[in-house]
Length: 197
Image (cartoon, rainbow, N blue to C red; front, side, top):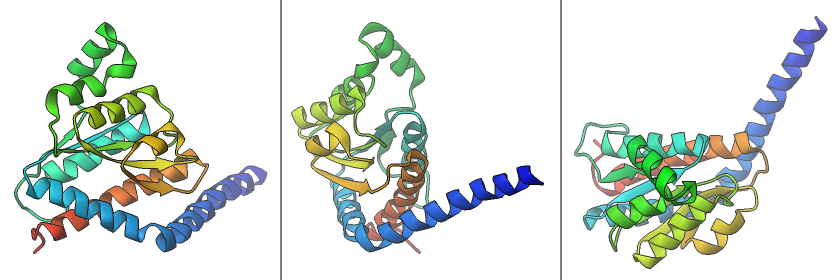
């Protein structure tokens, strides 16, 4: 019985914290999300590619959101130019082995990216060296950078051209908000491209 009560407390804590973060964000980041959706839409309209990347849970988000664009989000429509730099395990392990883990994203972007593309690094902390390095590579290649960040924003916050910042110190809440924001971006991009039915 006591065990069930403790488990209910844990469950309720997570639900309440999630709702609290959603409520704060719904009042604070709407303009940021719409602005960045317009930027991504503009890049796609111009023939550019959207690149995504992240570590751990953010790696999964990178692949998930990229797939919503190259596949579909809500409607059957043309595929959109979207690449997750987390998806090619041969490239990642080759680069990590030969150049180091800190280069796994930047080396791919150096080879695949072009001026006029957009990079969306996803990071709960903004402190990972491979995220910092890929942002710096994007700058060298004149690729616009817009990050999904959390906690303090870390080093990445000072480097990116734009960002959607989740004000929470809890990694799980930041990641939950990142995937929600990713889904909203996909919906707004399809709308901006006139692909919604």
